[in-house]
Length: 475
Image (cartoon, helix red, strand yellow):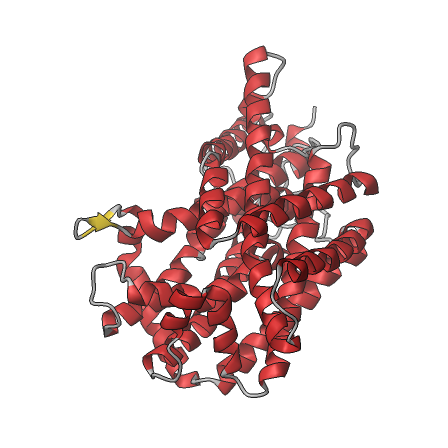
């Protein structure tokens, strides 16, 4: 946040005359869709049901306080803190690529103080790259492992086809065909169009639930949730026990942060690739706007609707969740809406597009990551991209075969938490690079807008000039 709202936020990621390659909506839709996949369409309905029966702050189950915290906690887990993890990777990579003009396709290349021929630095870079690939595999696998069973159950509701392993296998085949088409088309013409289509279907589904459902209740509960989030932010961020029992961080927040960390490398690489021409402030604020607020809106509307159904006694969703699983609970929520079959179809299509966008974008980035001689501006080979799609599919199918939400949680945590160290190194690298470049500018006796010693007269004279470090860093 300091980078975004200080003078450093004016730094343009690219040449002074560079303009963003994508419109704000296209850019935001790709950022949002790549990060969250179909998980949020599912977890936003069932997470609050878990929280209300097992309150994280020691309140009585199903009490008014429990319902309030249940509505708020999911928004915290998917909110600004998670998106700042993505921002740390994005800014570090984009700064190296577009300000220092260094081609970056690996996370380790964005950590400035690890560059050099020394054997120790080379080993550390290799360890970081391994952890990144491991984290991406875990993040994608855990997401698909949770989403396919839910989609399979909904297809069973729509068509009556038995919810078996064969149905899930057929769904993997359909997804593979979608992934292959989008990956072969690259970002332009493929992933960007898929992202935009996904955003419109997701927004449409949210608006239907909002205006058909208890609109005033959802708005009222959201206001209460925002207040609770401010009041309990520090507790939720740092607590490990609640009344002597495992606390918020240990129960849910750690799991979700592990999940976000596993997505951090691919998100940083992907957003950096599409952010040339934007300033640091525009990237960070855009990620918080499209990402954090977008995620929170799903929990506010879909989570609020689930809690309304439970609290009003319309459907005992907690019982369905505990006895039949989250797939059945999600189907039960959607079945309460008018035009049940149509809503199930819209929901399924939206989930498919979510899922396809996530894996297609991830395969594109990882294939770039593993290409040995990729030139700046060049896309990885179609064969490499297709191989990674196949790897993701096989790994995800293995998780579906083993089954269980506990399996998903375990894989996410194991894959994500080693990347805490990588996140810290990226933040340190950003700070070091900007200050080093500032010293270079001072040494060349040049004046740049974001230097702390700049006078008010100079700021007034050059207030409309876009900042770029390129001319100050060149020989």
